[in-house]
Length: 125
Image: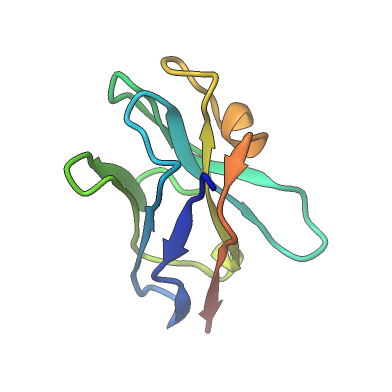
């Protein structure tokens, strides 16, 4: 069974940092991969993408604070989140679009064809 498994979520005070990881058989550097999040009562939001050429995209709301990266040897995708804000509270999902390699958008990653079970990130004041 192809899967992605996230880890690293938790609770942190505003201004703090968390690092998310994603690994599993669904990981591939050939895919558009990234993270989306969903807060209760809100729509799914693409947060960051990393395409097969190594290009990254970020939502305006996280630009300058979040960094997406990968380690192909470990088959792991990361999301480093710094200076966390209350509005970053959400369930974060690792996701892939296996039918897209290059030029993947935040909308693409918010409509994945493969995603994990999610990890909760809670930011408090």
